[in-house]
Image (tube, rainbow, N blue to C red; front, top):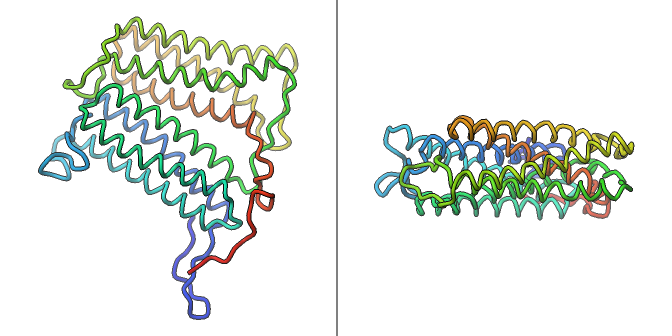
Length: 328
């Protein structure tokens, strides 16, 4: 998947360039680990292991690793995963510079992903040092969602043939709803973190809460979810009644994503109501967090498939440099 090191050409050690298909696989792995770290971080908080390691970067003042205690190793395991995430982003930067033909947009996105991931590692440490302050925890989660967007965009742009051509949508109502769905999904995430910061699953009994009444913020969150569902349902109605079914010049059209997002959003709403009625049990909360990640990834997919039009960034186009010799 990566270039081989140490080959010799006329007595000079060289590094083989990274093929475009190999680079896209590297980007895909980085994207997957960005999602995994969010799910594992939620598991840490929901098992009350958020302060299993009370210090950072050490586990505590005396030890780098925790003692043989479950909560300590759950938290420390999440830290180890974060290092793997950082390593995958470093591999993305390395691959973007070694990729031939070289693409400036992929290099910029790779560095943005790596810088954001490094900042997340530091923010995670600050969150621990602040004893899981709910505002810090919420910020940690929302930055992860932004990094998922960057990772998805990088993977999409890394397609050697260039991203699938976005369809032309002449219906103004459909365009309005398509533009609205990503901000609405963002609103769902933000209000969801307020609910989490006000609820009982704090990550540790020592962690503070936001102080809002849980029922009130849950209602606000449910309104944001219903707005997103209404947006997606509106798109589906337009799809059927007005025959708006534009398809890109190649590969998957965005309307498949609309249908899938509608199903997942409705399921997420059902899980949300169920977990609230059952007293917010940790297991259902984790399922809800994973569902939130999926809804966000589908919202990003729909947005990019509809409005991302970087046709000139295909290999060999104006956005790509000619192949350059790879230095030793």
